[in-house]
Amino acid sequence: MNILNGKVALVTGATSGIGKSIALLYAANGAKVMVSGRNEKSGQEVVREIQSKGGDAAFFKADVSDPEQCRALIQSVVSTFGRIDIACNNAGVSGGLSLVVDYEVASWKDVLDTNLNSVFYCMKYELDAMGKQNAPGVIINMSSVLGLTGEMGLSAYVASKHAIIGLTKSAALENATKGIRINTVCPAYIETPILDVLSSEQRKAIESLQPVMRIGKPEEVAELVLWLSSDKASFVTGSHYSVDGGYLAR
Ligand SMILES: NC(=O)c1ccc[n+]([C@@H]2O[C@H](COP(=O)([O-])OP(=O)(O)OC[C@H]3O[C@@H](n4cnc5c(N)ncnc54)[C@H](O)[C@@H]3O)[C@@H](O)[C@H]2O)c1
Image (cartoon, rainbow, N blue to C red):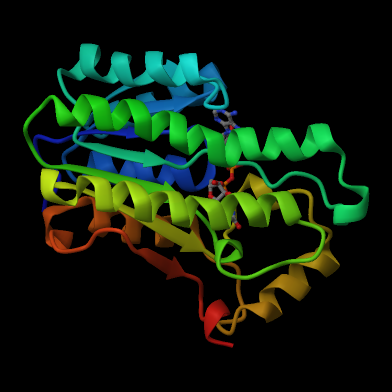
């Protein structure tokens, strides 16, 4: 079942974790995929994995906290594959654990640049490219359950992920009649390198925060992103969807 046959998709932060799973699933469902990230070696490995399964992919190195690199990235998708139909703006960092009163201003700006400003930069150029194609487009922005609730010590992350939901709603309203759907996905804790900083006690505490009593898998997030990216979600725009093992139901 190739529900993305003929589509061209971009995934940022696709060299590991959730982004890598999304890139693999997009390709397995027929899309040509531009894998992007900062680590060329890991990115090329993802490309080779896609190609070894008969898929089509390329890598473009970009730091999404830089607007010029975002512009070049989207331009490279169009010059490599001829168009851009789907974009998943997934790259993000957690930032350090610190109370608001102690949060370093430079660290705050770094987290907001990487998690929030990057989504604005990417959408700005994605929407421009999609608008010129006179065809439907889809954008998925990666938020978090921490885009819907607070968490002590993670104020910059929480603020950036809340703001992504608002930014998504505004962009979706602006593009609803143009056939470009824009939604946000909000995972709870997922098994990826972003959790490497946790001690085994912290991991246990997190597992018990999720009613299913386990940490999620990146593939479980990718399945939701795939559906939202496909024509099966043709009436879905301007909204946010959690994939959270019941985290937000408590
Ligand atoms: N893992 C979780 O528990 C979890 C939960 C909710 C939301 N998320 C979100 O999912 C997304 C993916 O995270 P993940 O868990 O897969 O972690 P990850 O660390 O494996 O992936 C993040 C990716 O973003 C890339 N990245 C970071 N800064 C970048 C920059 N400036 N330019 C380009 N790429 C950059 C990293 O290199 C990495 O490939 C993030 O937005 C994260 O906030 C993760």
